[in-house]
Image (cartoon, rainbow, N blue to C red; front, side):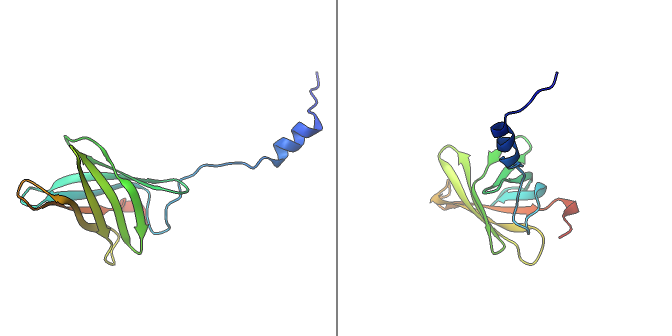
Length: 137
């Protein structure tokens, strides 16, 4: 039995673009699992893992630490070797993070909650992110 497609269906199928959704990061940002550290003033450092992903319009960073919830960072942007995002830590707290790349492959900088913490000073957390080892950068 031979099946014939109508000419309009054939034309529609041939005209339909092939859509391929793929991750697209800025050329100087490697996607994948980054490693690093976070440290609040006066506390021990904590090893962290950062899953860095992208689509055609947005960057996504999810931070994981042992014994803690995963944190999806909001408003992730990379411009002129500066990575910025908001880190909602829960209980009404949110930190604004600004990490810079100073000629190296990784980023480091501070995450600051502009509201006073338990000491009367804003909460400040230092963060470091290093790309996957196979980054070639």
